Image 1: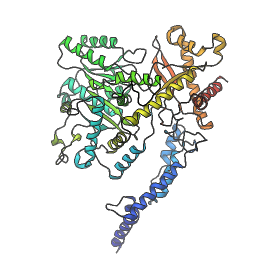
Image 2: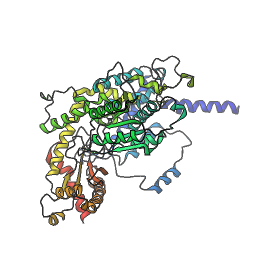
Image 3: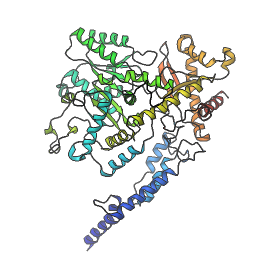
Image 4: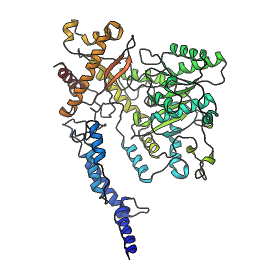
Length: 574
């Protein structure tokens, strides 16, 4: 009798509490209504945390943070207990909404913290569909036609950057680092031969990247076992692009030392200053190097274009006609970037983040290869995976690092690419560049501020602010510009540079307080956006607008951004 009751209890719990938490396996109108109601209430809970338009608040809810220091982490972990009994879905969704208090609202024009975009609705819905039906892109059998959708995105991107779509191939991965890691593995195997997959790395292949290239190169050389000491940093030019003369010198040094060059990374849009390397020049140097030394393999060229890829939408733009009617300054900035981005097709592989300048939900990254035959280097034997690949024509799990790859990556990207098209992305980027130009003009008119990346043409504006007391000391109306110029060029100003690097951080620290106390802008800080002529790091405050609602009017920028920066500086001075 006891056994029978226990069976009845689990059946009751299953039917009344467990099954309602899942979508129905067939059409049931009442189940669909229940799901819509849960979605509606969840949206209400989260949207109620937004401020109104007059409030100008760029974060959700209240500035209540559960974790304020390291001790709080331990407290949270110790208190966390899984409930004994099931909770109602509505209660769970109401409770989880509270964790969004203090979260930046990335679609707000004052949220300029870093290269973090708001997710466009098409990508959100694509992610929702992926979450509902859970396709796994390990192979076609587990993902159905979502596999074809991933291939379509590869085709669209290949066509956009100039790859031959009959030869290219690609797949989505877990982020820009995932794309970088896959490229590193390909480069190492190409350099050392397939046997290295069994024997390991027994030489010291070198990876060359500019000094302002992403730190992912250190992660990838560490995690592959190559070792971070086998990364060689190449000097940069004034526009933050790789110095090609120094690249040639380092390549020759590698040859003299008997160390093969596995990979050269062309950074196509640095995070801080949006420096774009001369990919055409890098490819020419590689060809010259191979010919000179009669080498069997050319170094693998990886284009780290996770941010810059989006400028490819201007490859077919008629800059003379200027149908989008961009301003003269914006048009010039876009064209200068396009002149470098248009050579992406020369790279052996390209890393792309749709969750940056593609405006999709996190995370959505892709690596695209120029030649599908490269995959032969890393493809695994099917016998290792006996329970997979019995019926599928599309089997990326044979060569990807991941076995499980959610279809959400591809769904979000596909929906945005289809929705925005070339004109949509051109309008988004154009607006952000227009606002960047306006912001720099406002900064230029402030005697205590100086833009330190005025020659760069990305979305980011980097600047430094100085105490007004310097005006009397230097006896100049343009005291900020003069002070920074001396700090950048004159080694005797090293002490001042360090002092005012710390000053920038103090200003940003005050801005963080003003953000929550007075609904100020969300700006960030970089401790080393580049180095001085005497190799010292330069710190800067960073404004990285990514919202399609970003304003371009100079008077509004002054009111909503500059006034708060000056207030923060005054607080530091006091």
